Image (cartoon, rainbow, N blue to C red; front, side, top):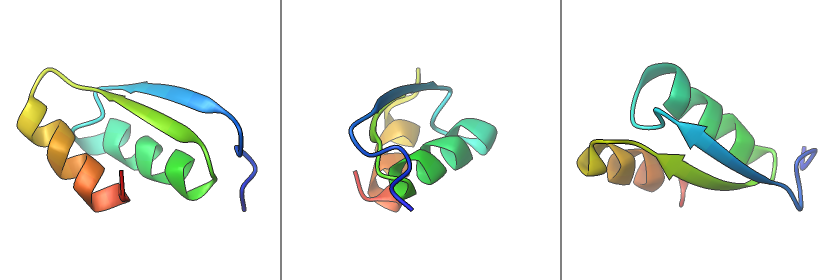
Length: 52
């Protein structure tokens, strides 16, 4: 774990499907993640779910 500690990732389409899954894995691996999503409600749901 923490293979991405100290890294920053910008995840596009982070509100659903593959984008949300990638964001979750990156956070679990220690990265700081920026969620880029057109639907702010979906972005907030993803952030809440992954602990951001």
